[in-house]
Length: 458
Image 1 (spheres, rainbow, N blue to C red):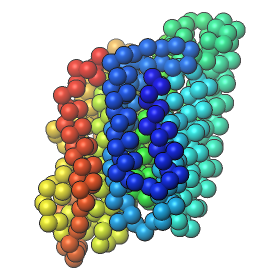
Image 2 (image 1 turned 60 degrees about the vertical axis):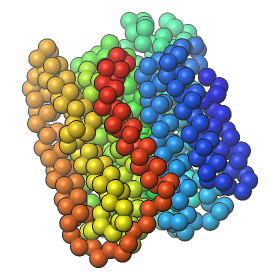
Image 3 (image 1 turned 180 degrees about the horizontal axis):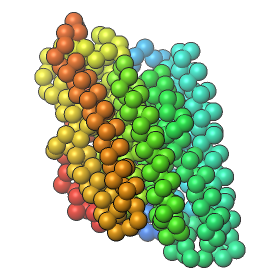
Image 4 (image 1 turned 90 degrees about the horizontal axis):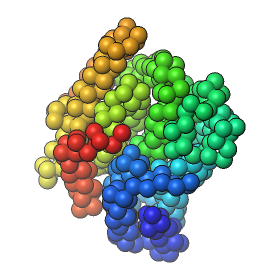
């Protein structure tokens, strides 16, 4: 268990010396060994809860961390960045990773929040790695938004703890014991706490009313930061929502369905039109990440656990790969779509990026194609066996409309990137970037053969 914390600790220590990015990538890759061990050896105690759900999310997050470490090898060839800022990135990347591991594996609401807080504070400094006024401004913006979100989560956790304190004592902070004793807690107080904590989690994922802060930050920061935000940070947030909403299902399923559907679909409505108006790759990918988080939330509360987890894993692999590909696509021109898939000597690279662009909008055989099919099926199954038929049908109808807008935009972007003449010069691709793209492509392919395991997680 302790071994999973060794790679981030080593990266943190080595960040104070002359940086060897190849060594950092090797250390980051080594985390896969303890993660795989945890994956096959679940356990829980008062502080940590290593079940199939947590170990699966940790495995996916670790793959993203390895991909980011590979991309960092060539980052100074893409962006003008000083040695001291590269050191800063690795230092706070290690703290970020350390906090996320704590959150993902925690069995204690307080420990879960501490991990999130550590990840939030460390990302503020990582945003400032790109030494520009815009990056500094966005770092402060994130600090404010993150403080609001994390404060709401903390307040919600306090109320959840209070709802069960009289019956469970100090075990009221324990995820596992709370889930096993829902009949003993004060339902009214738990629901208020769950509502407040969920709003904090949704804000942290870019939901309404704070939809644009995430896109602004990821555009202002270096590409690996966008990959971390989209692939790892949201892992711990969505896991916390999954665990708490699973308890809320036993407390009052009707309230859960209505709250999540209204909040998520309204967010999807706003985001779909923001995506339609998007002018560059990074903002497009950022806003698309919010879209996928809304779908995961809806599928999960609808009982489509397999669909939600498959969609989560696919998104966590697709989106960082696309963010990190942004540096490759924008070598000669900034923030545009025209001709960006042209100018490569090695035609294998634009093919891989094309597959990622098309896969993220759920074209078969993308894992997202199957997750959406199973997700909509779960929504319809719930509607047939409950009083939510009209709500579900309306929800499916609205989601399909908004997804159609997003689908059109991504296809339009792909056509501009592939067919329009952007008068691009020759694009250079480094070996570490090829390895990064192969890592994500292989992981996504393996995901297609992991359906049976994912179905058995929850």
